[in-house]
Image (cartoon, rainbow, N blue to C red; front, side, top):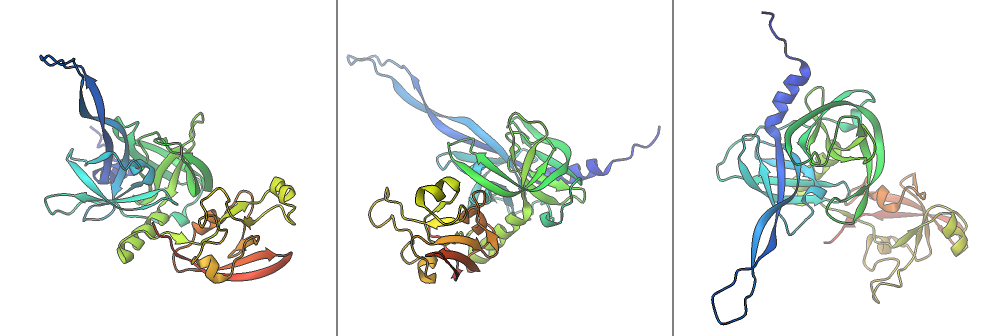
Amino acid sequence: MPIKTQSPIVRIVKKTLPSVVSITMTKSLASLESIFQLSKQSPSPIQKKKKVKVGGGSGFIVSKDGLVLTNRHVMEDEKADYTLVLHNGEKVKPKILGVDPIHDIAILKIESKEKKDFQFLEMGNSSKLDLGEQVIAIGNALGLFKNTVSLGIVSGLSREIQAQSELSDTASKLRGLIQTDAAINPGNSGGPLIDMSGKVIGINAAMVFGAENIGFALPINNAKKALEELKNHGRIRQPFFGIRYLQINKQLKEQFDLPIDFGALVISEPELPLGKSRAVISGSPAEKAGFRESDIIIEISGQKITPEISVNDILGDFGVGQKLVCKILRHGKEKIINITLDEKSL
């Protein structure tokens, strides 16, 4: 019999699978059972609560002491209980160490009674990807099919989508995504996207409903920054600018009689309670830098603010303590303001 040779893809999958975990989400839901007590009182129903699986996702181990990366939206229900199912079938409770809502990343820790070294995945460099290179997506497809493997290519880079949460009505904009035609289904969220060297280059995040072969992954470099923040500061710090603004477009230009149809207009929100509606938040980096209400921010560190690219979009590329150069319009004249980002308090 001829000797069966193992393909590089099979070798990579076999090496990767022990580090991939399934994440199950359960909630205590009340179920009414009419149990009538033999007494003189009127019959009354007794409420019983039982654990019901209401969702799931995937994740992967990135350190020998059991750090796990997944999507923030997989772990977003604070009232739910989460369980990690390891490759060997062991079920463990995770500890959530930090979340990065801007980049949709959550960092977990496996809480194991036994001290042991976990098999983990090495992280690659998502900024070095080429269009057309092969990638492998692994995850818990549809919450039912564990260790689902799909093969594809990098179809696009630096994509931007508006992602809708599966558990709530909230939507968030995700930028800098890797587009792939490798099958990504609900439940795959949080699983690894692997390159042909066996390194993680993305975290599977979303698919486009009604379209074929269009999936998206978060670049792993964002997760590496989050892990570094956690290591150095014990938390994932979020940058704070300190203004309220409106994104300017052609309609707002006409409505407010503005000189340009792009940029961010610094403006208060009268609907908010008194003291919380200020355009420039008291004590914020923006106030310290000298921003004023009615300023129009044109650029931040060379990036132009347009109807498609907001201040928050740009801030997602920067961290706490970084200095930004802002070009603004004030009373029709261009002005440069330097600002140092502070940490956003929770």
